[in-house]
Image (cartoon, rainbow, N blue to C red; front, side, top):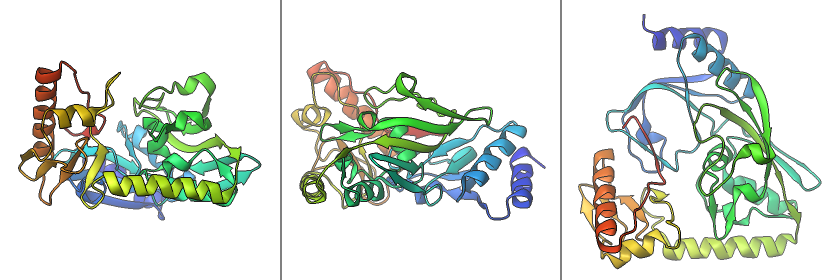
Length: 304
């Protein structure tokens, strides 16, 4: 019996409420709708089951890959020979005290920002249309419309690579553009504590609606994608550079540079991971050749 089968058997015995899936297609778990099967996936609904899954994996010399809603993830067509712990649908606690909200890592940003609005707390309006979870948003320091997670996150509870619980706060969070201390993916985020400012719920809703209207007008929300494929190069906007190079509509297989927003690569229905990466390489090479600016992938890859 190999170590994944052994881990599956142990978790089935010790965590009867933990949902486990073997050879699960990752196309079901990413917003790109792309990806082959993962050897084993766990979908914990409680922190206790998440901790047990991490610690059992480490005992089998397996280091889990942690994911949220899969909104910034591109998985190999061959899949991933590993163990994934997915927090979305579980770890969904939401608590509020004065100006502080504590959210489980599986809470979707749309739910979090609506919760803040209902409590009359401002600072998360930018997050309403981002299709990610708290854990993923903290990891990537997600942001939009001049807002980002680093402006609100005060501390993060997580499990270390050794399976021990710790709290990371202040400068140790190491936030910068699309970066945090959790970027090495060695720790499982359990929850994040955020400090917001009092605001008027009506004003907050109006701003969220405005951001939503802008997204619907400018972004290809009708097609699977991972949002902005490239990071914003200093002094430039990736989408503007790509548009300047007349790459809108460029297609490889089922992947296309969106005709609506050049910063997006969309899945027209049958795109593969290889299609997306080949197209991304073509875009990077063309932009570098014609503008001298080097683009860096923002989307994470797995199994590639």
